[in-house]
Image (cartoon, rainbow, N blue to C red; front, side, top):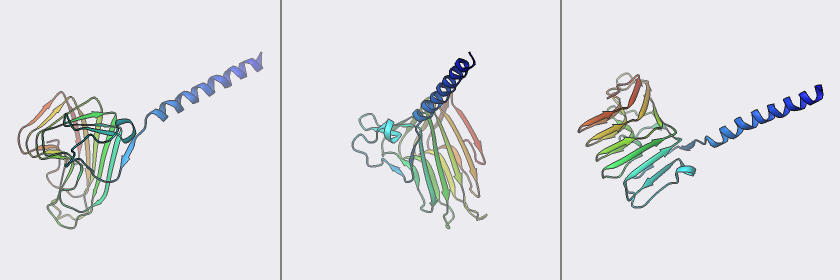
Length: 196
């Protein structure tokens, strides 16, 4: 009887461990260490399941899912983790996504972006997007970081965005638009920077 209980206990333990292994194997995170530049996109790009993003050119829609973009030692003014085409764009956020940037610029007044678009952007989705920006250590630095930046209008619809910034930076926001900024049913949190 004791042997039977031990065998059953061992089988249940093995099943328990196997179930966690399977769960973690499906939660794939896709990583990039350079800009996802879609500014000249003329066709569909990326596969959501293997690359963590898909650009639907016909509908001007970028979907990101479990994507991490890390840009270290950034020095060029205007650097963006994701550059969208020069037309109205939609962004859909699925899964858990992160954009991390480390500013190593020596010149003051540079601007850095998580997402950058010269036209209107509409952002939606049930996933999360976290921005992490580390500014350089020069106290005279006036560099800026914007999580999502539109040179026209920006609309956030039901999204969850968070941002953490450290080091020296000025006028940094999770969301910034030169035109109207509309936030509907969204959760935005920021540490070390402004929300908008």
